[in-house]
Amino acid sequence: MTQRPIDSKYIRIFDTTLRDGEQSPGASMNTSEKLEIASVLAEMGVDIIEAGFPISSDGDFEAVRAIAEKIQGPTICGLARALAADIDRCWEAVQVNPKPRIHTFIATSQIHLEKKLRKSPQQVIQIAVDAVKRARDYCEDVEFSTEDGARTDRNYICEIVERAIEAGASTINIPDTVGYSNPWEYGGLIEYVFEHVPNVHQAVISVHCHNDLGLAVANSLAAVRAGARQVECTINGIGERAGNGSLEEFVMNLRTRQEFFGFETGIRTEKIFRASRLVSNLTGIVVQPNKAVVGGNAFAHEAGIHQDGMIKDKNTYEIMTPESVGWRGISMVMGKHSGRHAFINRIRELGFDLSPDQIENAFAEFKDLADLKKEIFDEDLEAIAIRVQNVDMAQGAEAYQLEYLQTVTSLKETPRAIVTLSKGEEILEGTATGDGPVDAVCNAIKKITGTPSRMVDYRIAAITGGTDAQGNVTLTLEEGPYRAISRASGPDIITTSARAYVQALNYLEQKKKAGCRNHSLQFPPLK
Image (tube, rainbow, N blue to C red; front, side, top):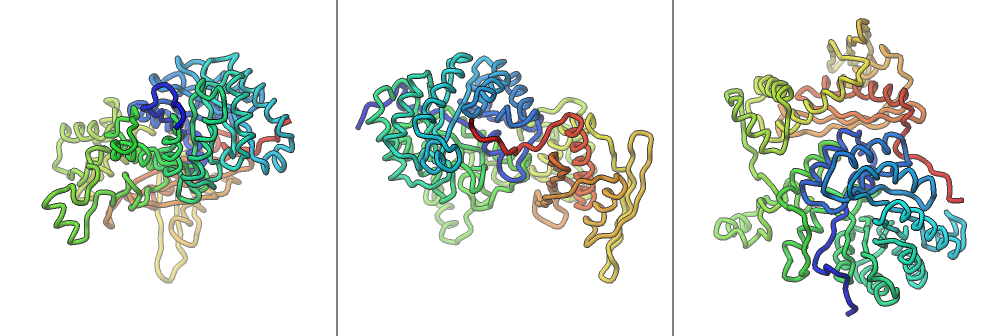
């Protein structure tokens, strides 16, 4: 086995939830939401936060800069193609942080060289070297990635890695960009790099695995055993296509099987569940019940033989404790007789730091909801807290307010909605029909506002069980090059849908005024 890097037992966790994770369809977040997630990631002990892709849009630039300004502790990283303009823009966004990093990349596989870049291998090496040098002129912490590294010729990847380190890269990332590899092959690639790159120990070797074949975490573990000391991952494994390696799964593998792997991270694992729920709530991407570590069934035991074993000794069927990942088990149940003190304490225990005004608004919402539901669960409280946190930001952006809503539906009649909106001092009213009550409400709002936008995504998810459960609504509106994603929650799914639609219209109008286009842009090819 070849010599390993300094601090060989410590694995750096590079979280890219806010960059690669946000590229999941429908997962786009605004600056306030990204800051909230970044704050939780910092509390968790993440080493590096990849905050975004600054040149992709004005909105993404502002989000990266805001995170760099306000989040202390982790290294704050921005992504940049191997282009001067990208690198300059990236530095402009991250430079305000005490620990900035520029992460630049270029594709290296033969298919990407021929079909996408249309450049020779030596031309790509020179582009990479120039990019790393330019980034290094700005800061010492420069990461270089060989996009589609898992499908790149091994000798070529060694050549470009050696040249990038010579140019000043302090971290080299060799990603499985399309989730094509397997643990034996990928681990072998990392070993090959260690054996054939003379200056490899002058940089940290990193890996970034996608989950197209369900092997992202397994590939990351194999890479670590082969010498990689940074792993790039996301909360809940979100990301493009089938997603990225899951942070919680990778970290808990190392912790649960510490005697086998022998590695450690700086992650405070008891914060994992909170981070998972926050990302799920803000992106609208529901965590599947059987998801490892953070799924609803992760610590459930229904089979009789399992229950019998658990009663006798939890270790019979539980390889890690719920508490080790911050799992709360059975939610605390509150009701209309619960007092203000108990409410405030529980909100704080759930990880929310609300201002006095937000506490007042949240408590009022809690009492209103308690009149509708017999039992209020932690998930309900989380939804209320997130709602009041977003009120200040939303009020500043809103042009329209929902004032009145009535729907009529039956088995024999076409659903109809009557809606009243306010816009400043102006009152707008309208009626419309639809395939269902939600469709009728949205049609009425569209008619009233005269918006040319179209709804391209609409999702509903129950927050808790039961017919009286609150629901989460996530919807996306598009108008030309502009896109707005809005989320709302509440016990009445029709009213909640209307609020989400109105909020999305206001966000869309704000984006149009600011010139902030869609997050996902088509970039020109490298020249």
